Image (cartoon, rainbow, N blue to C red; front, top):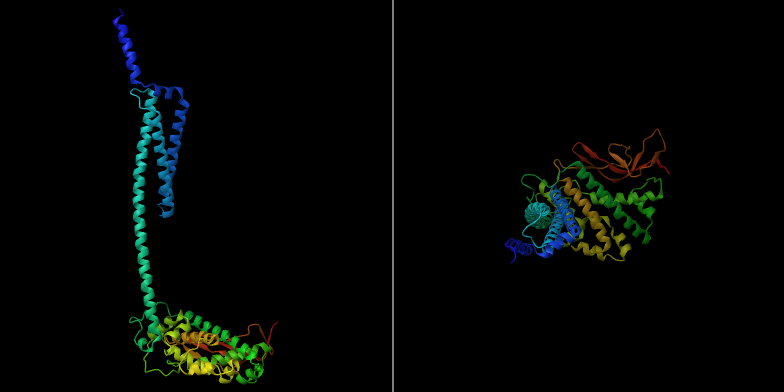
Length: 422
């Protein structure tokens, strides 16, 4: 018979084998390098998660949706990596009943990292909720912007209709006298510059068509303003610009601009509304929508005085276009469209001048007047005075000047008695 103590020892050995499964011992004892590599990967992944979390916090100040989304994806990616490592460890290392002190420390480290991981998960969910709230605010603001733009387009359409209709323009000014922009000398100055540029631009095709039609340009320039001594033959173009300007500005000082209107009373606000209505509109569209509006009537009347019948007949071989205009129409020919651009700039200047209180006044300079740098500006810049004892004199006025309260916008003049520096 064997001693009882021997049996107890054998039983304890058998029980010990059942408590500690063989695969666990082999995994820990036979391959410690793999366990160390796994732990290293865990700590590396935790560091990456911390870095991603910091990026997520930084993206909130200032708030940047793109950076927040990128950082959020990075945090989620690192969390998934940690989860995969956890599952990998559990699959290959079943939990023992009894563990060594070394294993206890490892378990404590893992538990600490898991607690930290849960904290990050909570923060990520919080940030995701904030992102959704911000996205909702952005969508609401975008919707408000869209609604505001729709209202603006509707108001602009109504304003254009009011500005182009003489009857509707009556009393259409702002009751409080508040406009969408300030009426300053710079605003009227820019309108004067635009008008002069439009005169210059229209004179180019006019002169070219006269050349093509066989006109004697020297004789034509002399008939506009005789006995003007030009420093260069090319300077005779200023005579044609002066002719266009004189015709276009005739009646400028009158509120009606010499148009026969149906007893319409206009206030400052009405003039400014008409200015705003036409400012950004194509003039051909304007006369197409309202051919008999004040602007439409202005275009027809000015075309008939700027373009002489003989001139038009030489250009086109007939007076069909003129007859069409006299019948109340607005032809869509390139020449008439070029004229509409000129007419628009003069009309805008007139509407704007009448918007000021007191009204902007126009002044002219007579031929032979002594040159004044205060009230005049030479269209030829690089001139030299021939006789130092005599001041240069005005050969012709190309563009009138304007008074705005105490300010002066100089008239554009061509001088005689000067030479042009090469």
